[in-house]
Length: 386
Ligand SMILES: *Cc1c(COP(=O)(O)O)cnc(C)c1O
Image (cartoon, rainbow, N blue to C red; front, side, top):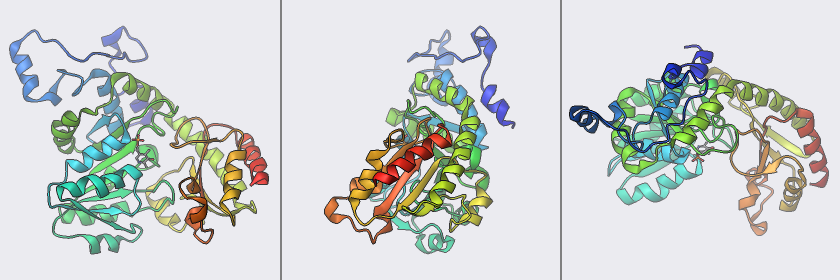
């Protein structure tokens, strides 16, 4: 399906709402029936129609249709956060006594679920280095029910061979889940590579304006129905109509924003690679990236997120660099209009800082929609302080 069609038309029936170009925000909790049997049908299968907005809502439906099509998936569900999307996708596919194989250092709140919540119900997790497919095969046990992937990771950009892992998991009836927040479906389509559930934090590029928290999962109709009927309705963390509307608005400009950010990022990466205070630039579509060939084979692009290893002996130097930035803001998240920085050492105390550990010297940059010159000037003056 054409991306322009998906973003501008799919799921929208303008004749239903005065031919308005922008869809309405159907801000309602419930929907009325004329016929008892129609109500009965909706009770029987809440996914089949409009009953109550914790389930299905028309504004959210427009968004679901677009997000599923972008992913090349049969259906999608949208949540009130990426963390809720992860929670529902995993919980729906494990039972007491099961085992999960996860890539090491997945997104913080995925790891928190595996380490703190699931063990209370007898579900254990093994973390592996996902860069080698053989590590998955070795970690799988008879009770493994989920393989959890994040490709690329959002700090190191370590990637997994999605096709190979999906094929292996299918043979063993293991459900594969991949966090695709880094690429978005515009640059990587895990479901088309055989992954069962693709998920994203829509807070990042889909929203695109740092004003909405949301998450999305996509996959087969049967998988989405299974999750809808249990976790989605029961946790009650589905997206609200207004936030869904903001995401539809974000989608309209997604290709243009990703492209702009990608172009600027190339220039910033080239600048950083020559800077004496930068030991390494980590960016998955840079030819120097260790998994560059695999990245090119499954990702059609990369936008604004990159990490530098800062050349520093002391934590103070990195602190001074970050605090000297005038335009690039120090904040979590990414994918919005504004460029951002996070130093790893924010969570490392001065006395624990060890410059021999590259990880301690990581500084993550997100390149937003400002001009390259504007950002490079800001970095240049901050390096002088650091
Ligand atoms: C932000 C993020 C999430 C979580 O999404 P929220 O919308 O913040 O709940 C999940 N995975 C990755 C890689 C993220 O960057």
